[in-house]
Image 1 (cartoon, rainbow, N blue to C red):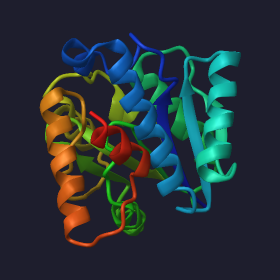
Image 2: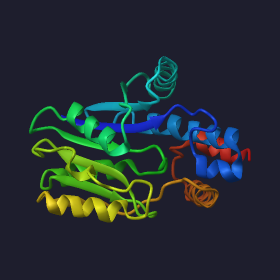
Image 3: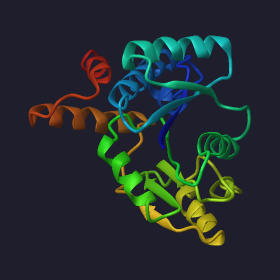
Length: 229
């Protein structure tokens, strides 16, 4: 069983993309983030054997929002799972404990800050899991855009204990945790998150270059939004 999970928040102004909102304003930043979520759900709708939205906050309103979003963008191919009200490391550990039910399972988790992430990287992650306990996709800000674990890992909390989240040391600290628990690592190519006004410029340039090169647009909502700005 190959499971893909994505952690995403209901796009409430003032509660998402707060770094970007410092330059863009809460409403505009939340509107862009909503496009990220819609595009990711659509782009990844047929990836893997099972797809899970780990949504937040854990509320009826958020569940309704993600139900509608998955219906519209991905033809209801996603299962909804509320993130527990814990710190980020414990939430990720809970996700893997919930969705990795046997030694044969291969489970991926991504965030919703890298809308341009190539779907091929997910396939690479599953291939790397055949020979490694863990796979990481390094983000250019010092964190990671993807983590994957296979079902033979005994303690799913091991990669997340004691990590200082939202710092440039997340990736290096996570690697240290893997070493401490003797977990082997497969590595994907680096990719970028979109958390700031500068990163939005990078994304816009990337989409414009892809369009000019004749590549299909896999982020239609994001492209339309940026074209209107």
